[in-house]
Amino acid sequence: MDACGSVLVWSCSKEEDKQIDAKLQPIQKIAAVIPPTPSLIKTINRFNPNYTPAGSMKIDTLYKISGNVTRGKSDSLIKFELGFSDNAYIIFKHNFVKGNNYAISVPVNMEGYNDDCGLLGVDCKTYFPELEIFTLKSLNLSSATDLCSLKPLLLRTSNDNVVSWKIPQGQKNTPKNQSKTVNLSFTANECSNYIVFRASSQVSKPTYLYLKNMKITKTSVLQFEGEEEMCVGTTQTIGYSASGFIINIPVKWYVKGGSQIVGSNIGSSVTIKSLGNNGGKMGFFSCTDTIDGFEFEVRAPADFQILGKPVVRPLEQTVIYYLPEEIGLSNTSFEVSGATVLSKTATSVRVRINNIVNNSIPIVVITAKGMF
Image (tube, rainbow, N blue to C red):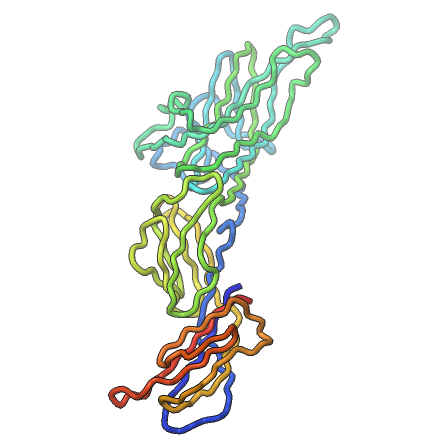
């Protein structure tokens, strides 16, 4: 864990021989959580069975496109009723953000029928409907588009993700009521909004599908690259990377709280400057400014002390400032302003205070950085 501390040294004509415990100046820590956002599970329990213009669609809601689709009863959310060569469609709207893994889990009850039974009604063959769930990543709907005009199969491309549940037809002694949780998983390599459910039947008698409340699990595949801690007034460049995901795409960065963007906020990386220890967040938008992206928190780390003389004379030949051994810092470095560095060790710096210039008393700031 990185850390830093500072001591302010006043120079005047009076010599002081005592040591001080100099508290560090305000610093802040940038903590990049990997992944930057935790997994999120959301339950979807809203369905609109009416024909709806696209402009009236709400996020995290299922809508009817076509076919015999109604509200379910008991513990089911949606009911499909299918006849011979029937198709029925519903569409789901959600903000699928580039850089996340999504797992969509849908409990389904399937009701087929028995036919072609032998003597005494045994050895019946069973027939079932079918279910497909697929993304439509390239679909962009105008506000005036009526959902009933959509032809989802014609809009599906090779870039879309598809999962299906199909039971072999005509098997003997198979229960006509089946249950399964159908799972669609994909990594969003672009921002999109829609998933389609297609229920279909190629059998001669009515069959049914019942969908229960589904769940969406979202997990980031991205991580931030940069130092975890910063001292006040310092800058660093933050970027991002991913596993199995296209990176170095320009994004729009933002800060909240005790940091400032230096230069452009558009790019595959951003330079930030720490302003104080009041914390905050920073991150970037993956899609638009109104859709959540990825961010991590800024917070202050533990402090430590620099020991040395608080008041010295200009041109004093040798003044030593050092770190107590008990704090246990490694990879330490010192930065000095207002004085000339004579020598350094891993835990101390020896300086000579600069002379008075234009009747101005020199002020010396010594900063130590290291890792706990």
